[in-house]
Amino acid sequence: MSRAPDAPSARRPAPGTVAVVAPHGDDDGHLREYSRLGWDCVAVVLPDHERPAAHRDHVPDVPGYSATVAHNGTRHTVKRLAGRGVDLVVAGSGSGVGLADRLSRLLGLPGNDPGTTFVRTNRAIQAAALGDSGIASAASMYSTDVRDALRWTDMVRLPSYVVAAADSSVTARPVVCATPDEVAAAWRRVGRAALHQAGSGEVMVQQRVPGPQYLVQTISGPTPGEHLVSAVWAEIRTDTRVHDRSELLDHRGPLFRALSLHALRVLPVLGIAHGAARLRVAWCERRGPVLLSARAFAQPSPADDYSPSVSHIAAAARAATTDGLGRASASRERAVMRVSLAAPADGCVLDAALLRTISTLPTLAHIIRFARPGSLLRKTLDRTSSPGELVLTGAARAVEEDYRLIRSIERVGLYAGRCG
Image 1 (tube, helix red, strand yellow):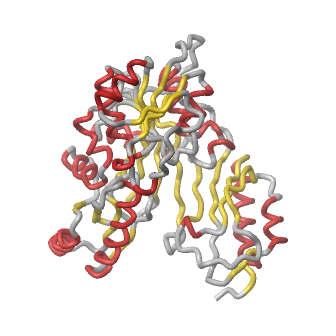
Image 2 (cartoon, rainbow, N blue to C red):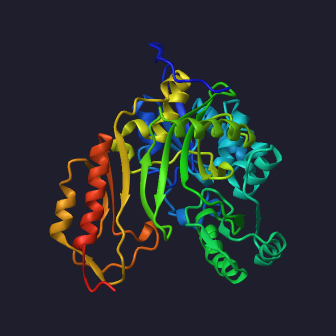
Image 3 (cartoon, rainbow, N blue to C red):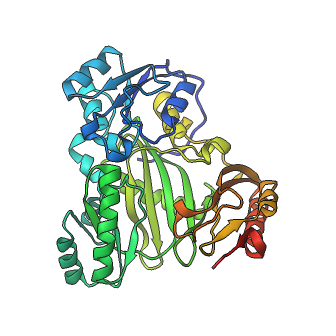
């Protein structure tokens, strides 16, 4: 059952203790948000052999947490957390989802069923589960062997495919392919990224679903069956599929409502009854919304501090520690846009004067990063190779005007030097 946000209650439960499992790459977001609510925070860290290579930093303690529990066995970890009076367990990253599910169950705390963790972490299994439930999904398969993928593509004969890590927490960009050779080449690259980021070399091949994509942030519980969509971001890409901008949708609009209804159908199928989830959904002209992947944990965004009402971690923390979903949603009257710059060719440099012009725009709330003026750039092929990212906030018309001005500045000379 879904529930509309209601008025905040004056009653607030006493602060407790939250265990954050594998807080890798969350930029201290869970620590910050739960601490703001007066909760004590304990970190549960995985041993090196269970930690993906990308997070093997060999740091025994996580700065800022009141305690760090090194997970060297489930019984040991449960005993340590019970001794500290833990009231809530959340996953701090994708590698913590499975353990958070198990610890919640063993401690008798709200959590998702450990028996269905694999549905919440594997893109191909998610698609199959939705298809079995009569919900539109993309045909998919996953394996560690590229030969399995090539046999599958030969059998289904689709116009195009997406090759991605099977683990939904991997951030490596999916690759669009049309031929067996392209699938094989992408498989090797994606497999290396999956092994590095998630510790698993499983790769997925999925039917490519055309259409715009949206990131739907949800909060579930604390009462089973209750779900709330806290924010929806529209992702706009260029013709070459490079990130252009992400826009926060107005929660009063029809598209927000349609995507929310889709999320409410999807969440129970994925076994998500508690906590945060993020759904990537494509809107296909003929089929409507189609889930591409789901992550059962909250992640920070550089936009959070400049538009706190859209922070996924903050929304999840409020829902879990105050009065539930009524406190998870906040007013969003301002437009928020995250913009990526795009160098047109190798050999360009950023013009310092025009960069200063961008930095004085009235709606500019935050510069996530800018390449150093004068340094040689590579052609922007994906989000990680963008020479700059920034957050615009304010009235919708003003944000749109500043966005268009940024693109005009790019065209008239932001990229100087030996472009092309």
